[in-house]
Length: 75
Image (cartoon, rainbow, N blue to C red; front, side, top):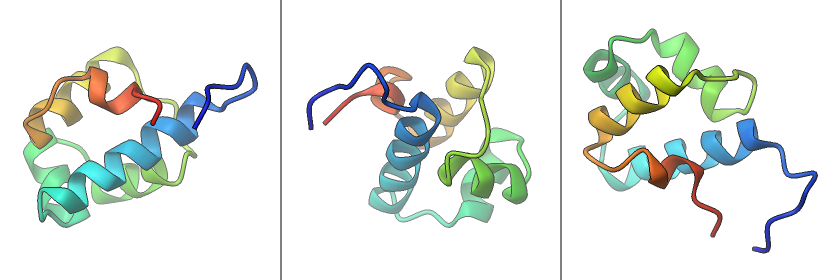
């Protein structure tokens, strides 16, 4: 997928977070607990409805055991 100037970064982060979570075999509840977030927040993030801070991206990446770069990677 080529990056578009109009690409919504919230949707990109949400897609990547959901994919990485599933690849890790985690539920939203499990990942939320690892990150100190609510399951509702994580659900909205995965849908592209939340605009996470840099700190939140770091916490999610830590919970997934990946680099924060993986959450913004365009594939």
